[in-house]
Each structure stands twice: as structure tokens, then as C-alpha cells.
Length: 238
Image (cartoon, rainbow, N blue to C red; front, side, top):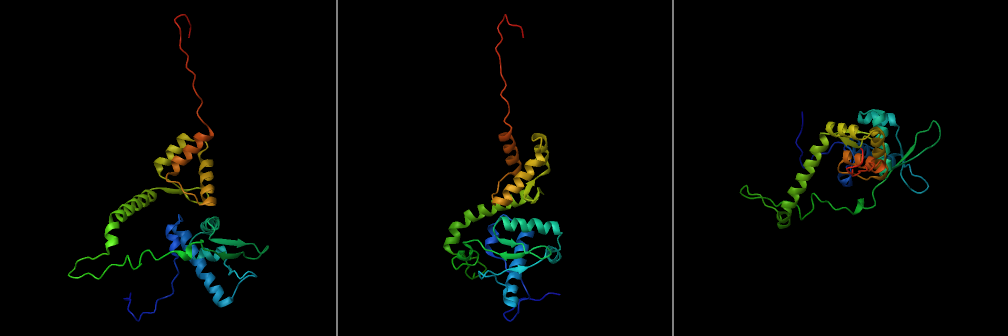
């Protein structure tokens, strides 16, 4: 049974979703893991007061415990932790054999300068009368561009949904047709998938078409040899 939200409703426990995550090329599990770590960091500061000599808040959270919280495998958690660390969103410090790592949760430099793009005053809809929708003039001017952006985002999302993740970091997306094309074109295609997966995870760089990137890299590494053509004279024997 569910309840309606009212002015007197006390919200149930919830996780904070930082707005900057919307613009980052991270899968949903990785974003959710970051939210859980951020929530645990806030609890650590409030209940335990765990800070280091520099005043940085840290927490202890085992991979097994993370897997249980998110109902994911430990391998999935390890991959998401590596992606978060490669994107500079967490820092792990080893504490020696038999001791869990210290985990520091971090933010992008411009995270605190972001404005509320969804509920900003200029974007808030006016109260409509007589069932007529009313929008700020700036929204009317930008509606065409917004529709085009939404259309492109939807097309990109639908295209990605038809692809399966590959590579050690599960960030190389290929459709069945693209995978077959890569297998037929690139002899050591599995090595190139891992190479692209590691490169994107470590640098945060993204590519529009992963199959095209792999084939392009393979051609750069192994350029096709130039064929020599000879003109035959009437008296030459071929």
C-alpha cells in the first residue's frame, strides 16, 4: 500500500543523487554505488567523525558489504569501484594486509558551481489557466533545440540498449552485427576490446562508435600493404 505526498509528510530515508552524475558516462550500477558511498561518507562524518590529518572524510566499506547492499556480484562492484577511481570520484588507500581500504569520496571541481538546471526560476512553468499550458518566453525559444537534443539522446540511448557490454570494465558496447564485423575484420579483436575498455576507463574518454574505433585502431597498427601493378608490353611474358 502506498501513500500520497503531503506538506506534512516526513520523507523516508533516501540517497542523494549529485546532479553532475547526469552528465557522466557511467552505467547505472556505478552511479548507484557512488550514491551509496557518498551516503556512507556522510554517516561516517556524523556518527564516527572519521577524518584524516588533512581533514578529509573517509569510510570503511568492504566489497562484500557493497555487493550485499546493491544486490550485485563482487566482480561487478570491483569494476564499478575501478571506474569511479579512474574518474577521480573516489580514492582508495590500502591499510595493510587483513585491513579494509580507506575510501575517500570526491567531487568534480565544478560540482558546487552547478546551477539547478531543471527547477531554475527561468525554466519553471507558470500555473496554467483554462487548461492552457504556459511557459516562459525563453523556454519557447529553446523548445526546438531541446526537442532535438532529447531526440538525439533518445536515439543514442536506444542504440546503446541494443548493444551488449564487453571488456574488463564492461564499457565497450557492441551490437551482435558490430561484434561479428569486428571479429571478421580484426584478427586479434579481443585484445583490441580490452585495450579500448582500459583506455576509456583510465582516461574517461568516450567514443561514439566502439566498433569503428576498434577497426580504426587495428588499421592504424596494421596498414594494408600496397599492391604493385605492372603494365605488360606485348613482348613481355606474364
